[in-house]
Length: 375
Image (tube, rainbow, N blue to C red; front, side, top):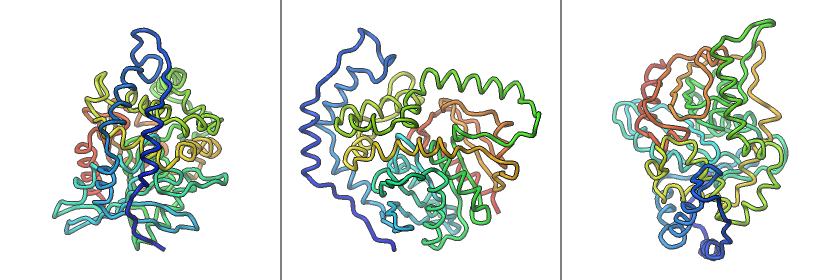
C-alpha cells in the first residue's frame, strides 16, 4: 500500500528545539585549534545562533512538499520515498540511495537535473533508508544494507518498475551494490560514487595483492586511525553515543557537521560548499525525527554482514563509477574490477563525499552519460 505524504512537523517540536538551543551548555576548547580536535567551537556557536534566529524549517518543508512524497508499506515497514517522473521521451527508472550523515535531502539538487530533459530523463525514486528521516525505525537485529536492498527491490516492483537502475554513495553505495548482486535480472545498471568500506573481492588461494592495492590498504588504515573513531563507535556501542546526541541539538549538530566539514571539497571553509540553511536542514531532519540512533546502528548491522564477495559473487550488471577527489579513501580501479563489472569510470575535477550536494551538475551529467550507454 502506498499513501501520499505531506511533511508538517508540529510547532511544539520546533518550539522545543529553540528552547534547547537557547539553553546550550557550551564546552571550552584549545586556543586557536580550529577543526583539529573536532567541530570548531566558534563555528558551532555561529551556526547555532543562525539556527535559533534565522533558520526556517517551514521553508524546508515547502521545498520537500514541492515534490511528490509517499509512504509505502513494504513487508510491514513504512518506507518514505520521493517519486518524480521524468519528462523525457525515454525515461529510465532510477533509485538513488543516501548514506550517513546525509539524508534524502542530499539528492534534491539532482531532481531537476535528472528529470527535465525532453529527450532522455529518469523516473527518480529517492527513498529514506530505514531508521533515517520519515522511514520506520527497525528495532530488530538484521537491518543491514543487504536487508534494505530487498526492501528496495520490493518497492520498485510495487511501483511497477521491473527493470531499473540504481545509484548510491556512502551507505547507499552498499545498498545499491547488494541490490545489483541479488537482482541482476532487474537492475539494468549500477552507478556509484563510493565503494563500501567493507568491500573485499574474492581472491584465489595464494593470490598476491598488487603494490597499488597494498598502498591503498595502508592509506585506508592511516585514515581510519585518524578519522575513523566515529565509525568504530557506531559499529560497537551506538546507543551509548545516542543518549547525548538525541538529547542535545548542538551535540547532534557537532557530530554531523564535523563530517560535512572534513569530508567535503571545501578549501578549508565549509561555507564555500554548503550554506548554513543546507547544513541545518539535514541536522534538523535528524533532530525532529529522532533518528540519530536508528541511523547509526546500521554500521553495527553492516559490520556483521560486510560486502565480502565469495567465489561466485560478482556484480555482473554494467557499473559506472564517479571518483571525486576529496572522497574518503577509494580502492584502485584494478581492485574494484575484481568484484564489479566496471564499464564507465570518471575522474572528477572537484567534489568530495557529498557529491549530490557539492557537485550536482557533475554527478548528474555522469549518471546520465552512463545510463545512456546501457541498451
